[in-house]
Image (tube, rainbow, N blue to C red; front, side, top):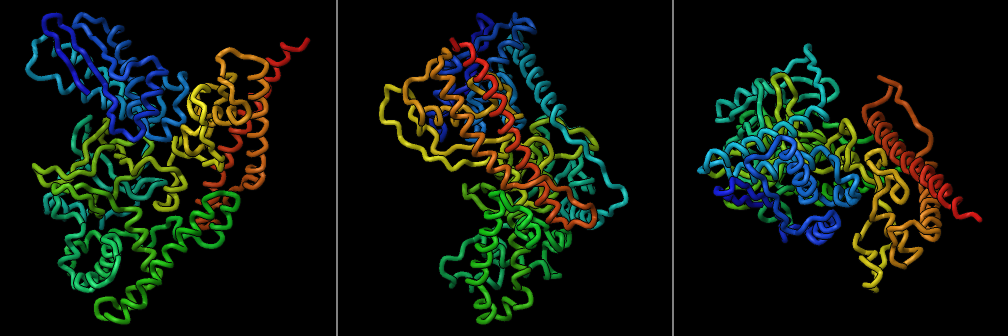
Length: 549
């Protein structure tokens, strides 16, 4: 990304580069070309530009920035030009706006007044658009006033006494458990939370532990496993530096890894059932490799009563749901527990997106805001671009709102297209997927709200001839076959999911409730695909009727 200034002409030239190191470089380059962008296209802005002209320029930049910031799922579903004219996902929209803001901010110093003025106008417009995204996708937090947060407040006080800087309070939020609440109005770029390295739990604690000499003798044991075993014992240590942190942790994490048999069976018909079973089997195998051997050989260091299977699962859930990957000043990526930061909940439209690198100048981990957060509002973090199945399994919740990463992978054979004359290879995508078609903006003929890569692959499987942009009888018949086959596939999938179920309130256990909620979500996704296929078939049959003699 770069900005060129031409002070003589009072013109700002803005360029949003696509990095060649981007793992999706070739796909993004092709999409940029399809959208009419050069690989390094520039946008020129005059200081005399009217507000409408500035808006038009930013609209062009934003369409390009969306593509540049796509992750794999967004790129797969975002290849429709109609979809690209709109917000693809809240997180992508924020990332795109911030990439433009980064270019603008680089040009704010040391320039003549007219240039600085137009750049400030651009910045104000971008910040307003960022705020608009937040208002559109924001979640209202209802504070539970009668729930005590004394342990959490003691931890926060301990943190502040040890160098933590926080503009957040901790409270119980209805439907979400504990959450971090802004205690003042925070704007874009403000640091909501700053954690010094000295209170971060990472591999350094191992070297101070009596476990470390034993760990060194265990072949193949990972740093993450060592930290997991350390935490199982440390939570019982009344003299621990981190006692107040461990005191705030729940006795049970309630993630998919703790699902009982009823909840697992309630997932019948979903891919998540097998995923949870396999995850549990993996943890059991890992535990059996370590115990009772470690306790038998070192009972004082690994007391059997502290290293039960149940405690092992608890520790796994702790590290899965609360740990963060952090790059330290030495460049090493470490898995850490961050006291206080663990109270930040996830959202599809987070306030905090860019974190995870220690600031060498302050030797601390900072959590800057990517969108405004008002006093009394819950401040959200992005845990990552995760599906609800992943969030349920490892964090124990399903996010509110439409999660753009809720995809259903499809088992479709991808064959390499060897003839370059027929256009892009059918294997341009090595795998295919679907999601709720309500997320698509284009349900017209030849689109149907379904992902372009999937439709393109299925069309090529039936007809390898170059695809014309002009509707022909052959193209219409091919699409009708494609949608008919897709309907058959998803009708079977919907049948496997069974009828929609409702939980029975307090009589239903927490894990069965989560399983039912997830299964109903899967049913909604599959139903939307079937509806789109059926509507598409009606469109095609109507068009084919025009060819009847």
